[in-house]
Image (cartoon, rainbow, N blue to C red; front, side):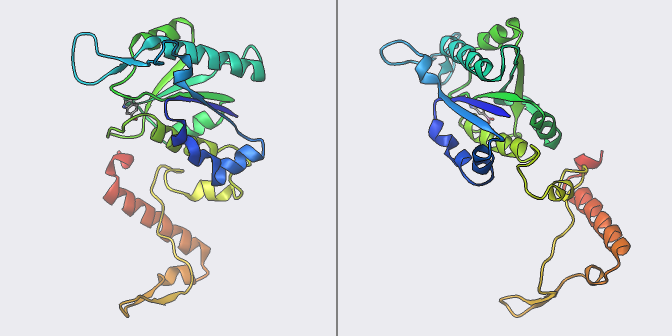
Length: 240
Ligand code: JB8
């Protein structure tokens, strides 16, 4: 899978060198390319923003650098993947469609995703029109109902959620089917040894007896009941 990121703050993406994602890159399962939007601004000050037409607070990202950057990234990706290759271009945006585990699964099957990180108040609307007219596949994706300073942190989160679902990236594929949201419910409570643990305040805390029973049917039933109870309590919206 190939992932491109266009950003003003490439340093924000440094964590993608680490751990699981870094290993996927070294193993050749992921090609990650970070591009500086400012390389596509051609005036003396390499300007990428300007004041909002019609008035209002803050600054708006100029359309020119974005159109040039995305056209260049598409051309570079096609040189690697083939001239017929078509990326999904994702703009993290608090006004986008919610990004969920189902989105991560769907996008983990894509050969190529381009993330476009906005900053300031956002990007000139004509960039989206330009991409749509060029026949590009575009998605606006929101991590949740809160506002970040830009798309970079959302790209870190989405990239990790997507790449860990690419076959071969997570060593134990079975752990992917037991986690929260894999079946639309929250995960059941987890315990490890010792079965009887004395907390720092002296309280003895035992693992639920059913988990020590060796009765796999009873254990599965208890876990299913716990998942459902937790989901009803914490995330009733998931049951509706
Ligand atoms: C300016 O919260 B976010 C997000 C916030 C942003 C921009 C992009 C994404 C651009 N603020 O996902």
